[in-house]
Image (cartoon, helix red, strand yellow):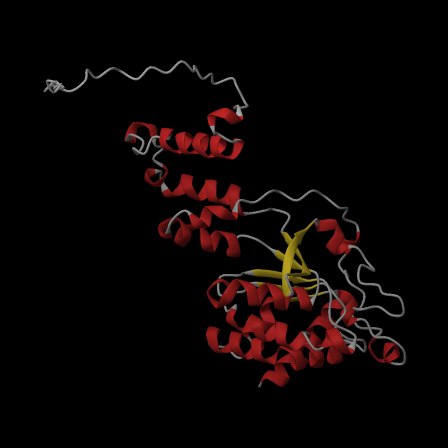
Length: 307
């Protein structure tokens, strides 16, 4: 019986295009399990397509606003609108993530009398002493845009002095003042020009921060006004001067060394009239003095201790 031979072809099979009979739709939010695609895989795929669809080419120059090419006067006006508040920046102390810091508050809440009252005693002495602060009402603070400092180094160098030198910082008390000055650092402390203190530490716990807060102020050699809108001590101008020197002699001497005159800090101190009022038996001795004479007595006593 003859053997059977199998003849094979030398060329391969014809290649055919792959045909898919499943038509996907962009409106469908669900995928059947038989196709092996879950919701998680679909969302990941969609996110990947969205990322790849974003153009990576930079915008043409004709579409970029030439902010850095603006005149300096116009840029300063923009910086002033973004970084300054005519009513001042009111700060109160706060603890965040176990760290002592400050936060901005409405102007009226810092200036209300009795803001620091506790159950058994006042945490601070009588807060606002000026007539303007006692009659003011709570107003809405202007929104600031400090993120403009993060654009680049050139803009930071232009805006940093405007933020700290162009605003009046009204601090709730010496605790808030210490936290604020410690947070901004020595470079920014040197550009601060106007500070208002609304509360002076009175109890043993909070009185301990009076001296550290004013010591932090030693870097603020460009300060033009220190408004003490609070009661430092009772007993008349002489006792108030001694209290201020005891807590702030580091700042007083630093200002004198920077300005070349030992009593230069006395010229920028603006103290409330309530501190110059005598109480008790001392009222008979200094009750007949005018407010100007009491202020001169305060400055003379402080100048004598600085010599």
